[in-house]
Image (tube, rainbow, N blue to C red; front, side, top):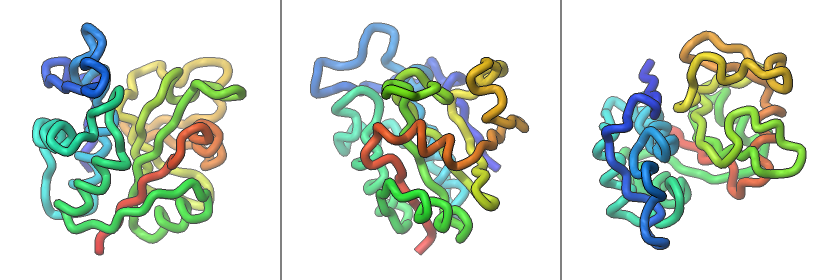
Length: 192
C-alpha cells in the first residue's frame, strides 16, 4: 500500500499562500506544506488503477487555485482530483457517515487542528491533513503524511495512538475531537 511521507520531499517546491504573497521563507515545499497533496496521491493509488505523482498533484493544486491560502484547500483539490480520477466526492462533519464510508471501501482525507481549546494537538499544533483508509468498529487506520518516530510519544497522547508503521490507529473520537475546528473536516472519496 502506498505511503507518502511529506518529510521526504523538501526538494519538491510548492507555491502556496498565493493570494497573500506566497509561502513564508523556507516553507515553499512539500515537506513543510504538502500534507494534503500527499494524502491525495495516496488516496488516488488506493482507490483507482492510476497513479498521481506528487509533482503532478502540486501542479493540479497550483493550476486550480487550491494553493491560494497556506497549504492546500481540499475543498478545491478534492473536487479536481475526484473529477480527474472518476471518483465520488463528498464533504461532511458527520462521524456516522465517515465510519460508514470507511467500512464500505471508501477513503477520506481529514483536516485536523491543534489550534482549538481542548485540543491535545495529537497530530499537529496547527492544521494538517491525514488519510483515513479503513475502520473496524470505531477504530480507524490512518496514514499520517508527517509521521516520524516519536511523534506520538507524549504523555498527553501516548495512550490514544497505536503505531504499526506506516499505519497509525486510534478511536474515531480522537479524530473527531482534533477535527472539530475544521469545516468541513472530512473529504470522502469512493469509486463510482
